[in-house]
Length: 454
Ligand SMILES: NC(=O)c1ccc[n+]([C@@H]2O[C@H](COP(=O)([O-])OP(=O)(O)OC[C@H]3O[C@@H](n4cnc5c(N)ncnc54)[C@H](O)[C@@H]3O)[C@@H](O)[C@H]2O)c1
Image (cartoon, rainbow, N blue to C red; front, side):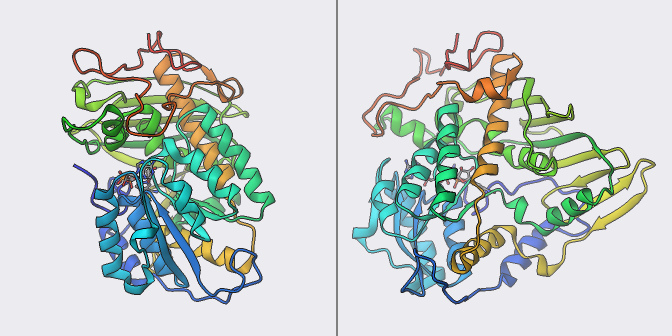
């Protein structure tokens, strides 16, 4: 089953933090999202036109959502779409046409199919929306920066160390070229998080002593293999379950919570990590390679520890949230739109309740991107997007290997599991054994520096 919601990550547990219903929030916020029609500045990429041309690359659940938000922002037109598969591109196109009419202008000659379809799509637009599985993100980000395009790209931004080095390198180049880049870590565009960050900055919780973050829920979709599919075709269709293309759920989803802790630590990143994890319920051949639970201790340069846990197991305790413990108080926050700070005695000393004007963070991030392009103001999330991606990846290296891993060492590893060529006939690096089972990392045996499994 494929995800059908535009914002498939958005499945946190409800809690008392919100003080209001989350479902109501998403509906109300989407309904009130304001269209912006701002004057065009002298920005090179948009000069001479009042309209920003968009290319959507990766037309699945999130891509459809991102294109919807980009078109809702106003002054934009979708002119090109690319996907590995036409059975993903066409439904996305129909849905967007039904909602946005003539703002969707994608004739057959601007539809691009295949794993390298991005190369042509990038050329068609002023702004590219990169919403494929994350294993492809570094090459697509590189191509977009080289072509001088503004970028919205989803998290995570890579799945291995060489990929993240590419993103760090092109993040700098994007800045040099005055390109605007937004990364889909939308909590950074959510008013409750922004307000809480301000309180922490002003010292309401004192010095940060420790942090905890969680993405525990029942799990994710699976795609059944069809006999006519090549191994590559199957792995890309079922991408969430293969590490080279999906990154594992500590990276794929839990990155949101890890990013919040990095952000509240003033965008420092951990220097080392150690942890444990495994697959207790993911034993079926369909479930590829990824773990169903990870628990990691990350250590920041000042000794602060972030405890991170993520689990994909049904009928267990669920939570998607962050807790930041300070010398004077503790912040409790999740993506419901609310936040609470309690003092050391447990008394609530600050509370944020969601308000209608807070908007939808998925919309806010797009509105800010197009505003920055038009006003020609600096905006580049790629640095923190790459930092938080690599933090989560460091956690995966720790749980897969069962060893302590260090940031600087791990960043230098040449451990890519990407296939040599991107087409459906090329063999994947790792395939199924005679029983249809894929290699899975065994703690104590797996070498994350080389991706050697046993
Ligand atoms: N910020 C959020 O809350 C949020 C929510 C959901 C998903 N996401 C992110 O968005 C990305 C996509 O997730 P999704 O849920 O939309 O998955 P999805 O499977 O619904 O969509 C991915 C699309 O990319 C296509 N694709 C695969 N390889 C491609 C290639 N080489 N070139 C072009 N297209 C290719 C697939 O066919 C599919 O249509 C992931 O990185 C995910 O983490 C973010």
